[in-house]
Length: 204
Ligand code: AIR
Image 1 (cartoon, rainbow, N blue to C red):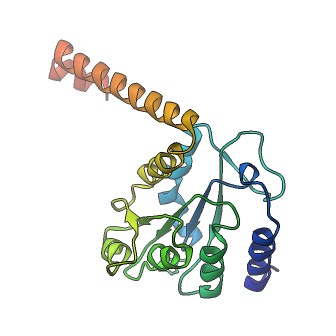
Image 2: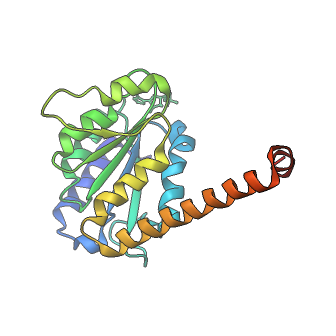
């Protein structure tokens, strides 16, 4: 059995360990419940696309230079864990946090942003009905957010933040966008040249 206290202690001891930031996760991904995992999977797909690895051991980084970690942290069920996660984010070497939550009281992203400040937090409303509670921040308490379910874009935004410091990530983002354009160009030409009926038959 793992207690919340043990997880809080773990985060605090990692924060106190003064680990080289090259060896810590670059992005922390938290979600209100493991029932959010399917929606948050887009973020992990984007990280895979951009060469990030998951870091499951704080003191044993993966060989890939860039990494993310994941935890379930609930604003309402585990408020002390949320506070600890936000408060230790900078000292644990996280450069950006992605926080996803669902329901009408999706407060994890916005309250984590207040605890983690000035580490930026990117909010992912897991459902449409979560959008207002995620983005509704008062002046002076910033949060950036993507549209409901757009966790893939949340990861791209996180990498954009990191790319300000890491040229190699800037290049990966540009390559990703070039591939995206090539894909759309290919579809566009096929739709035009084959015509609507043949194109539709192809993609069935
Ligand atoms: N949630 C969990 N703790 C606080 C909130 N707002 C959210 C989760 C999930 C939804 O409540 O982010 O989207 C339902 O969670 P569960 O665990 O009941 O499936």
